[in-house]
Length: 72
Image (tube, one colour):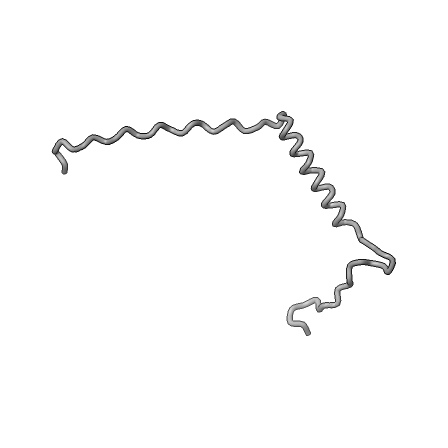
């Protein structure tokens, strides 16, 4: 136990400032970002569902590999 007069504790640092308020759904920048994300998602989904063809037929080669593991 310590009964002597030791050095006092320093004062604690001040608390950090509160974080900024998050943007609301009514904020124009939030609406713009959401519209851009939805547009990108629609464009991406559209290109994946399209079957690309050329003068010789399908551009995607047919699968010639085996359908089960082991390669038999």
